Image (cartoon, rainbow, N blue to C red; front, top):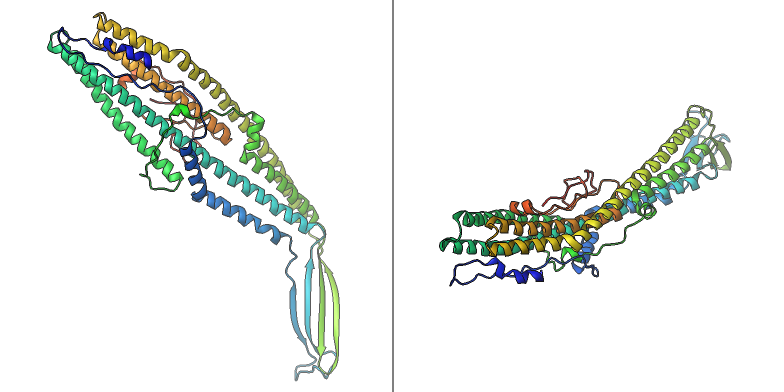
Length: 468
């Protein structure tokens, strides 16, 4: 922050005649200033949606169900019958006896009018269900990429913050050593500064592992090698915040609700088809019977199926589909209720996180900086201990880290809202900053309770809490 440039003299206490050790100005973490679509994120989404095998599998399932539609409306296969009728067993009497002949017969089954149309409609509604499943795969894949990209930006933001803290602690250690050498400071101050730098190294290793994990998850989604680099130029605060969706808008996006409603319509068609099955089917037969030197004979016939076991067969099928329809209707109501619950949860979390973000931007970060400045000024004047200066630095770093976590959780809730999933919203978490920074800084409010943080399939875990 620019105001910290004026703190440089306050961070230097040395004996008369000793050269001052200036501290660099910390690079400020940008506040939320949404910009246009990130080209890196757009490229990640394009790669994932073009090559991911789960999406290809879902596409194949849709095409498979589409092939069932024309099959359902075709007439049953006809039957060709070949036969021989002969008088006596001693010799072949065809051409000698009028009742001896060869026979060729063709039989075509004909379902009751309306059955073929209903079967086509049932198959078409199966395509609607597989299309809803494909949409879920696509939406989940897109949400996973957005979550993974946000997690990567969060970890890299934490790494920049950690590097910033390391510069200050390095200068603080130099200052403590200078004061100790001239007899104005204690050895404990020097040891504490060295301890804080060691803790920073542990945190740096942890963040490096988190960054590689985030890269591997994103590369898996786009079918790349896990170690492929993903250069980023955006800050976490650059990610745009979309408008929150209403419950009706979320329902319109929900593949689960669309699939459940298609299931109800399909069951209704199956029920209509079961009722028609109580009607008889027909079969038309035409045949030719050559008799050698005698005139040939021919025949035409119609057969009708007799549903005499309808009480135990067709009526039971009607009852079966009636129960199925009731169950499908209950499923729609269940999905709709749960979806509205999730929408309300995410909307409330978005509202709370927005207030928290605004509090950080409008007051808390400014107050934390002012406290840092005041403590350092007191340290310069000899009215504050060295530990007080460290705690002020750690408190400022902790607040900056919590602000980053708030931005990440706000993105997580928006992603989950637009994903319109039924599972609790997964959290986006980064790595752990140095332990000392936790003692002075405020933690960002928890957006959920789940510990899940790696992008993947549809999430089934509960809400997750943020960590530093």
